Length: 508
Ligand code: HEM
Image 1 (cartoon, rainbow, N blue to C red):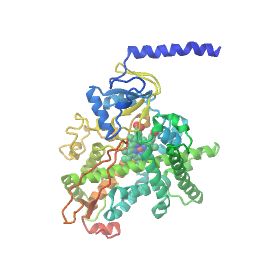
Image 2: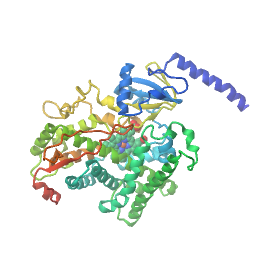
Image 3: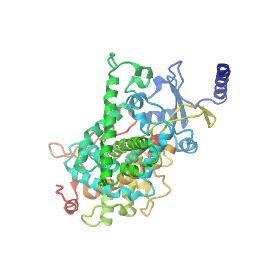
Image 4: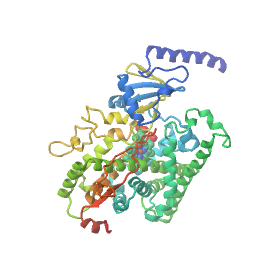
């Protein structure tokens, strides 16, 4: 009976889908070839978000459709389209597509950034939003401030700015996530950095054929050409180590009454002992490690972008120094309470976030139902890519978007102009998947930018003749969904001896 029902139902479903597709076409996009679809049109190298933006211009549409080996892909190129779909229809546009290398083989699909929106995703997300509520922005201020001062002490010795920032962020986010501080954090640093690097490699589109041809995942590890399986196994081991080691330290400290507040300790305190404790602990572990992974490299890439912007636009730095001199006394380091009076610093942070968004296509969303938008048919199972870069480089919202110009966010009285859209509304993602660390990330960027500018003048490296080397300001141009600066050098010149007393070190 069941077989008869299925036999009758399937052709009917096929007919209904075909009929909808006939009535409502797919959004425009490059012509699809038989079987492979648009496989050869997919951007494979360079800044893929720029290529998608160009495709949208070519088809004169803020929504385009591609298909590759049976996957339906929709690119949304305007704030309007993103708002209409990912925000207003969030219930059907908020799952995640599966990824074979990163998700399945390396195990990251169990963490909530890549998980479909099921109950475990909800539970993990709740842990992070409860520990870092936007309503209590001060909760981690003292950790953010002491982390920033650590960075100020480290910068003048830095040989490779990006590397120093990565080491610092891995330590600083370890404190926020697990309450593990100072030199002790170094014990976990190697695993953390290696793990983050493995994620960056595996998330690179086209890096592993198994992501396109998923059947390859069944090949045994010893088979010629299957080295990806060995890599996945090793990288999975790193993931498990990063999940377990710092978590167990925090748990033991909480039991001993010596834990400093952190995402993990706050979540452990909320455990309901009348329910399955092991299950709750597993969820806390996954939430913590996902938050750790989500917050580290993103913050590093934006701070790298900020330093490059200061090197390329010295006049912006001069204006910032003038503002800081008006507000702070000699030797004073900024604190969060200075934010309302340091509008130009806030404008710099906004422009850094806008100018080179570090997650320019967000993390792809998955559409879980057939949907019609603007007369186009968007099939269930489509991978949705919001083009954050296009939204933040839109001429209407940000005239002359190619210029780094923090003043665009200020009015004639040097106050933040509420009519200019805050780029954070796009740079941290959308709908139910919007970044749960957004508030803490913005606060960290703000205090770090303000403090670096208060303490230092950022200047280019000198060549062997003592002449400044023109900064190139290069960003990684390989195929990646994560936009980040290439390694570079520069000099941090202390602005006053008074700062040395505030930081308790010699900066020269
Ligand atoms: C400047 C720093 C950061 C940037 C630019 C950033 C950006 C983003 C973006 C674009 C997404 C994807 C949103 C979407 O799919 O629509 C995201 C998700 C996420 N972010 Fe962040 N983020 C930052 C910092 C942080 C921090 C500090 C945390 C720590 C709590 C964090 C944790 C996460 C998590 C766990 C997700 C996945 C959310 C989900 O899938 O439900 N991020 N972030």
